[in-house]
Length: 447
Image 1 (cartoon, one colour):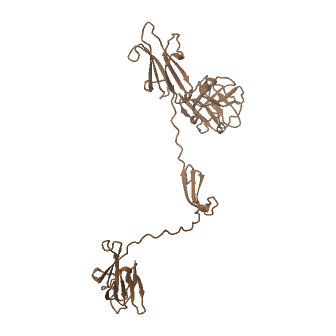
Image 2 (cartoon, one colour; image 1 turned 45 degrees about the vertical axis):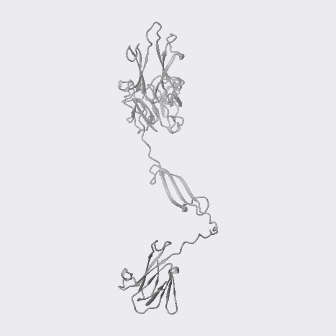
Image 3 (cartoon, helix red, strand yellow; image 1 turned 90 degrees about the horizontal axis):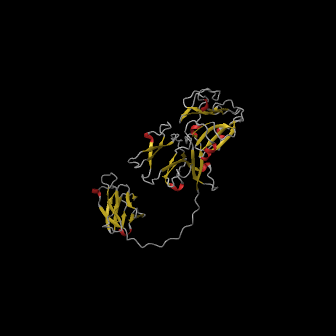
């Protein structure tokens, strides 16, 4: 920035060099590093330190005297400085043009002196206010379509450790994502065993074990559904040749098969007793189910409850047909991924009729009308609160009252329970009108 002076006529003297200049009263620009003083007679002195001194004497009527400054080059001033150009504003445009410069003086800064001692530390400032964050649940609405979390951020101005509403400066919402759709239904694993004659696979004959998933749900392992093939071959023919044996057993849910499946043991009958003893097993393979045993297996009859529990199924609800069926949300023990609805005569180990699937399939809600249902793995399922709950064969006709009172040829494949809160019942296979019966039981198993 430049200092500004006004005068009528001036004589400028800087570093012993004097020059008489005229002006009309417009401002004279003076460098920041220079100081000015005015005498009683109107003489103005510009003192630029080591660069010299300029004296402006009150002028007569003349064009304004202007001073323009710029940074000096390092060649001229190694420690920095200014170039001062002086002249009259002959054309009256308020700017000192190059052709109007009458005197140029370079004013250099002195060399940088040594660093002074460090000053004393200032007084410690007051403690700053604490920033606080409040996190609260955000219900579904304008800010979060399906709900989420609300973060309020601000400064604890009153120091009470609580972020008050008037202290909130910023609010951010972190919203939950929408629920994903139901996954695809799982498939049943199948095992098919056939004998093979002498050939490339088994030089001395043997058996072929094919495994895979029942992709078309027809209960058979078709050629295009085979995923793995194993050959168990007979030993080489000889005087003391041994027979190859294979045993297939159920594999309970566990480390080898999380949802259960089959264990295939094979080996040679070393003691020729016709049985594959534990010491004779040389190979073991597991064919694991993608769903628990009997889930998505259609409508079933005569299953043993003890056998089901051995396979990992658990009874989560048991009552008599004459009792009121609890509401679905009260069946808190039935929380597995799969559910089986079944019925039996009281205290019998044998289930009269049963069907199982994913819990989301078994409990999928439909309008309260037996004309509505949904089909999975050959079973027509329906569940309607304050109406009825049950199953029938896929493609079957229904007669509702509100439970299924149909008496078609497939009557033994039907199960129906009232879900109203004033009556029990109703149907176990062909046996109906069990609303007050203590001779029949409703059974729900979970996996």
